[in-house]
Length: 336
Image 1 (spheres, rainbow, N blue to C red):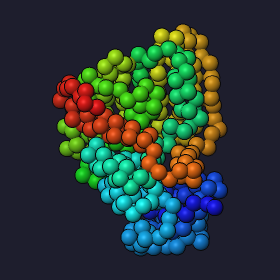
Image 2 (cartoon, rainbow, N blue to C red):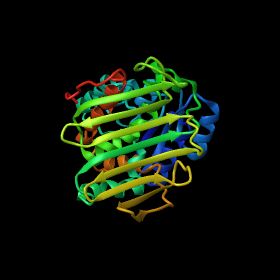
Image 3 (cartoon, rainbow, N blue to C red):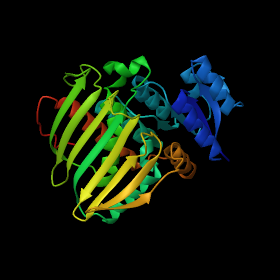
Image 4 (cartoon, one colour):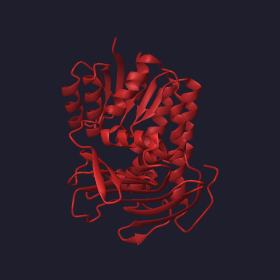
């Protein structure tokens, strides 16, 4: 039997994940909760048989296998906790929480309920990223000593709540940098930071912490016994293209470069760099957007119980908190 899922929030990304889950044959949309009439109409075109509800409690009262949450960030933690406490597995858009405290509260609820929890760090399952992580794990480039991570979005977010730190939890670091930090952890393990030096800017002016939503961040992180990491991300940077997305992991035996193609948000290559030689390992096309959601559904069919892989989400949130907390200089955050 297919999984019965409730979909809460069906904007563009919510509909995309709904379609991927339905198309996988693993799940069907049992119910939809969406306040915007236009978004609801488009969701009903994908899942015409789904019940349309106007209350979150009504969703939770249904005999669902899981709830897929794609609402504004300020709602993620609370809705996830309520769904988990009601006995439903949860697949949530990032960020799971606006800070590490909210994230840890959701993780505690998932453990207490013993329900499967996953977050849509979708770039992790792009074919180029998947291959990159495998090669790093196999030791192809040797121990990694330098990591350069970049995500510049020439447009920035279109919805006003993204610009309110109380609602979004931060700016481009939460929106874009979180993907980079997640992939860093997947590649190099949950690093313990000796120091972090972060510069955050809004409209060209330095800002402190979460006082405003930054549109540019330049960060250096040094791991104890691990690599030096440079992270840069931005909204509306004049980059001459729609997006610049690149990750470069350098080791003693060469480097791996994950990069977008011609400014695309969706097409990626992976290159192995050795001196002046470049070997192309992965290239488009690759329909990767819904793979993390489908992976969650596949795991849910096998075992709905809590998976300790979710514990890593606290490290991602903690690293983001540390970036926001160190914009005035270096600090030790070895507790991460």
